[in-house]
Length: 180
Image (cartoon, rainbow, N blue to C red; front, top):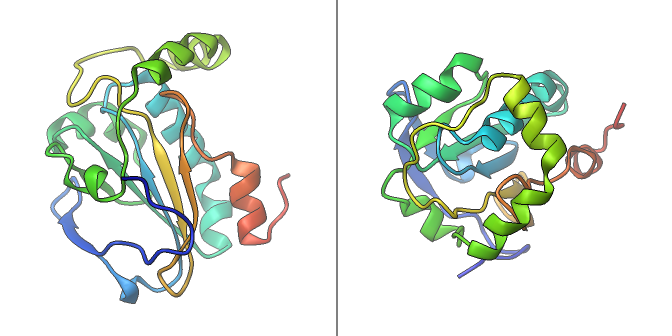
């Protein structure tokens, strides 16, 4: 079941891909973006990670903490996504426990809509993000959640296709910073 704005974020305690304990609860302290991805070798997921990493200083300076979640095992995430050296924690959730908790699921229609993302696919391939091992639900659609200082979800964004994430302009607006 999808969740909506106004709900308290679900707490969890997991290890990131390097074995560091992440306690995601009301003591996390600060604004948070919880970002769900597909699997580690997904070209569009790696493109979004590239954009998140490139924009992270601006987001972090505005007080945002990012936590990324993939449905692949940690070793696969290290192999594919880990090459980008993300400055924020990435959690492996191959059993999709967190996906289920946050109502993140797959969609065949969403997979079909992805064929219209020619520019994004071309950019991801150009950066060397090529399809690899598929792990988890192939039709998984990403989702992003903006969580305030009181650990309440202010924005629940469920993508329409496999490359659809919350636009940076909306994240910047929520943080009260300019999109330049």
